[in-house]
Length: 498
Image (cartoon, rainbow, N blue to C red; front, side):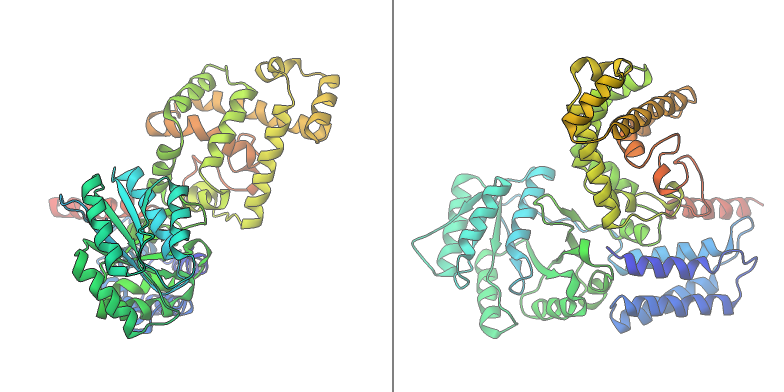
């Protein structure tokens, strides 16, 4: 997401590098490009104008600190303003001690309300230990209530059906009563939608809201519709009073105009974004992390959370122990690949890494698919080995390679390449262990990921080998927003002491 905007903003800011001193002309030129990038990303015109002016005021009034690169100051200002534009900090769903807490899901037909209802319910159960109950009051669209039942079963969440009635108000009253009696602390109401906004729809939503007194009213919108999504959110907010926005299809939105505009236009934050079709493909919206992604600073915190949520820590620690004691086998390597696949596509993971770790290399969806295919081939080759061969690769002679290639539908060259990559990975991990680089949190992540990531990318001693990127230990010109901020504060304290 945000690929187009990200490329243009980074190019605009890159033009400021190398300037010993930033003149108003330099800043004006960069801001013109930033303004055009925002407008081309389908950001609301007034929002883009206000954003550029806010950056201009801060950039022109910023004191130049010695030893701080001038362009870094502008990058930090743009980062701060981007994060503020999208809401400043993450906005979690607010719950009370009452049972049940009601969450209304509203939006136009086709925006993804029903699927989002299921995704959010699963997220709440997994991450906030909620016990949700789903109910659909869409009695107009054919099979709408059956669709929610299918979604509920897929995410392993209970659903209230009320087959005996088609009256929305009777259904919600029954659902509230059932949730209270059965101890469900969260009632998710999937409301009816329309192809367009009409008064009849709004009256029904107002009645449901008055009856259930929801703690949250979430408006679901297709991110790819851009400013149409913003205008629809504004209309729903005026009549119903929404408390947050869920943007679907963010993984396919290269522009990001809706995400960048909604908070400023309607005053309510984006709370979740849908990033894929699978039921776990939904993320809380963190404005600061998204701003980092847009400016090429990565999103390591989200990556760490992804790893912690999907990688078994005991397995990762055991793999790390084997790696550092030179006991890491091809069987362990195969298990690593299985863990790595749980984290999603390569292109998604690369976008979470800072550019100084990837050398600025971007992975297209086609390249990501190639990596996935290579992983499957690698797994097939290892599966064709005997237990002895997986535990001791040195016994694999020419005749064994021929058998393994035939059994996996690959070539002897493929088998040789896998063995070379495996040997290179063992050498790399031994070197890193001797250098003391496998420590702390990096140790935990490396245990589950290093082998699979490095080798599937073409490996060698460079974890980004095939893509031509720099080593993960290299340091580029850019820093994270946090490190820039800390360095600025340090300079200020030093100057005060003088």
